[in-house]
Every structure is written in C-alpha cells, then in structure tokens.
Length: 217
Image 1 (cartoon, rainbow, N blue to C red):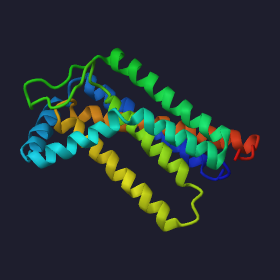
Image 2 (image 1 turned 30 degrees about the horizontal axis):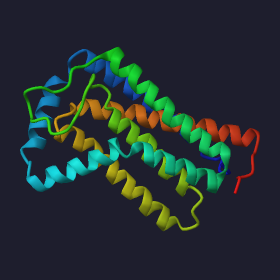
Image 3 (image 1 turned 90 degrees about the horizontal axis):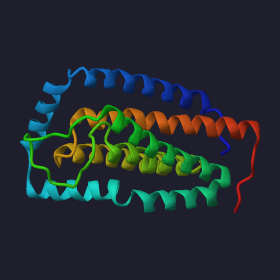
Image 4 (image 1 turned 90 degrees about the vertical axis):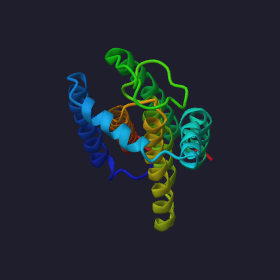
C-alpha cells in the first residue's frame, strides 16, 4: 500500500462511525426505534412487486452466499496488485468483522421482525446488527476500495466505487424488504462495517508508512 496521505482521514472515519454505532445501539436498546422501524418496513413493503422481490432475492444471495468466494477473489487480487501485506490486512478486516458481528448479535440479542411483513429469505439468530450488510461493506466495499485506489483512470475508479455503493444500498434494503431485519439493524451494520473497514485501512497505511514492503508479483 503506497498511499499514506489517507491515514488520518481513515482513522477519523473509523472513530466517527464507531461513535454513531454506539449512539444508535443505545437508542435501539432503549426501544426508541420501534415506531420508526415498523413504519419504514410498512412503507417499503407497500411497493412490493414480483419483479422487485426477485431483484432483492438476487441481491441478498450475493451479499450472503457469495461473500466468501468474493473475499477470496479480492484477497488474491490485492496480493497480486499490492502485495502480501495488503492482502493480509484485508483478510484481517473480514475475519474481525465476522467475529465482531457475532459478539454484538448475541450480546445485544435483539429479536427479528415478526408479524409485520412476510419473511422471504432464510435468517436465523439475533437481528442486530445485520451480518449480511456488515460483511457486504467489509468484503465488497473495502475490497473494491483497496483494489481501485491505484487505478490510473479517475473516472473508472469513481464508476466502480459508485456501482459498489449502489449495491451496498440495495443489500441493506433487501434485508428489510425480505423480512429479515429491522431498518435500524442495517443502519447499525453500516456504521460498524464502515468503522471496521476504516480502522484496518488506517492500520495498514500506518504500518506501510513505517515499514514499506514492495508488492509481490
């Protein structure tokens, strides 16, 4: 990883996202999102169509079932383009996010939506924060950001990142639309997913600045 000027901003993003997650978690635990959560689910389900349902099922398939193969591809791509250190930091981010999600889910132990909208996809265990959304941000979001950092074409880099952002938004909407999560579950997952990604990015950039390592090709 050769770009070190982004280290301070990455650390700030990690800190701000973590604070927002803690605030939202306190609000969720206090039961103060219940009315808004229910209303947002009803609004989203009011526009249900067979075509939209199919699109949401396809989106959640990618964020759930295909996350591990995607992580492997991103790891290989980072290893080839930026070297072993970049690949290991990405793997560390993915593993940390998975472990952290499990700890948060079973520590908070929030029940999933019931009796509000049909459950159209498999979803087990506690609800907060959404594992699919959190891992999508780390696996796809962080992976794409790292792989595109050194692209010569700014337009191509921006286009790829924009597509990934749209996908991540769709993945979050899908978990609510398909009856697997409350809206606040996916918002909390977004905050902690961004915090985890930014933390490992800042750590990797700081480590690279201290002890540069040439990419292995």
